[in-house]
Length: 480
Image (cartoon, rainbow, N blue to C red; front, side, top):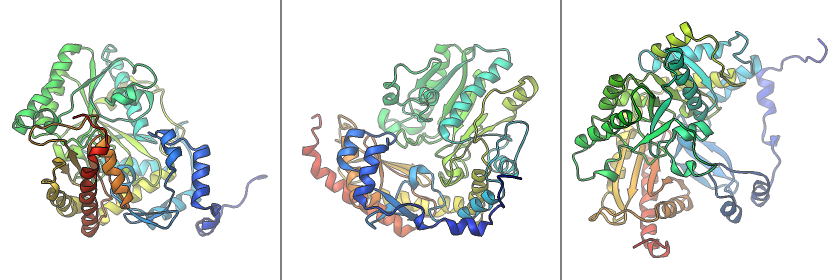
C-alpha cells in the first residue's frame, strides 16, 4: 500500500534510541531553555527563574544523576511512583516489544487490545475481592475525575439523581484537574481560579498528632470517623453519593489513620448507603506493605483508583477499579457511559504495567516492604524522635513522615507553616538526597527496592538537615 513501510524490528528500534537522540548542551544552556519555555507544575515561576532548575539526565536503581554528574538518592521514588526502581531493562523491553507490534489503538468503537485485556484480568486478581471491572485513564487526576461522573451516573440510574454530594477530607489530594481539585481538600488549590465546584464537602482529616495528641489514639479514631456521620446528617443522607479518602493521606502530610478509624468509616458508609471510594494512587502497589492500602486497613471499597506504581512511573497509566454493585447498574441500566480518553488502555502503557506487576511478584517486593525495609525505615527514623525539632515520626510500610514542631512541651507548631519544612528540604537537596516537605512534615517514600544502606544514608542526611535547620531558625522570620 502506498505510504506504508515495513515494520522495523525491536532490535532496530532499540538501536535507534541512542544518546544522540537529544542535543548535547551545557547545564547553563539547559537551564536557560527551561526558563525560557517550561512552565513547571506546582511552582513559583519567579523564584524558579531566579534559581534555575536542576537538570536530571539519567537514573538507575534508587539514584538520579544531574547534568553535572552528581549522584542523588531519590527518597521519594519520583512522585511516590517509581516502585521497582529506575533503569529496569524489563520495562524498556516490554515497551519496545509492544510498540513494534501495536504501539497504539483505542478502546472506542467496540474494540479492545490484548495488553488492556490482560492487565484488566491481572488487576482484578490482585485488588480486593469484588473489584472485577476496570476503566483505564492516564493519571490519578483523570481516574478521580472519572469516579465523579461514574458515581453520579450510578445514582441517576438508580433513580436518585439528587445524590450528588461527594465528601472528602481536608488536605486530601485527589488530583489537580478542576473536578479532582474540588473533590480534594487542598485549600491552596481552592483559592486559585475562583470557588471550587459545588456538591463537594470536606471533613477534617484523622490527624491524631494535630488534633488530639494527648487523647487515646483509638478513641480519637472513632471520633474522627464520626465526623463523616455528622457531615452526612448535616447535608442530608439522601443527597450524599460517596465518601473518598486515601488509606494513608499522602500529599496531605503523611497522615496514618488511628486504630478503628477505617472500620467505623466503613460502618457509617454502609449505614447511610453511601459509596466508599479508596484513592490508592499513592498507597497502591506495595507502598504500605500489602498490595493495596485497603488490604492493610481492612477497607472494602466500592470503587478504587490506581495510578503511579501501576507502571512504576515508566509510562502514564491509571485505572478505576469498579465493584459489582456499581458495575451491575452501569451494565443493566446504563446505556452509553459518555466518558473516556484517547489514551485509555494505551497498549504500550498496559504492557509496561503488566511487566511491573510481574517484577513485583518475582522479586517479592510487597513482602520485602512488609517484612524488611519498611520496618527498618521506621526503626531508623525512630532515632530522630529526640531531636528538638521533631514532634512525631509516623508511617506505614515505605512511606513515612517526620513532623517538625516549634515546641514539644506546649505542642506549638511553627507559624507560618511551611518555612521550616522548606528549609529542611533544601538542606536535604543540597546533600544530594531527595526528601519532600509537606508544610512542616518531612516525607519519605523511596523505591521499594531501596537497600538498608541507602535508608541509612537518607536518615543520616535528614538528621544533618534537621541540625542545620535548627541553626537557621532565627533567619526564618517565624512568629514567636
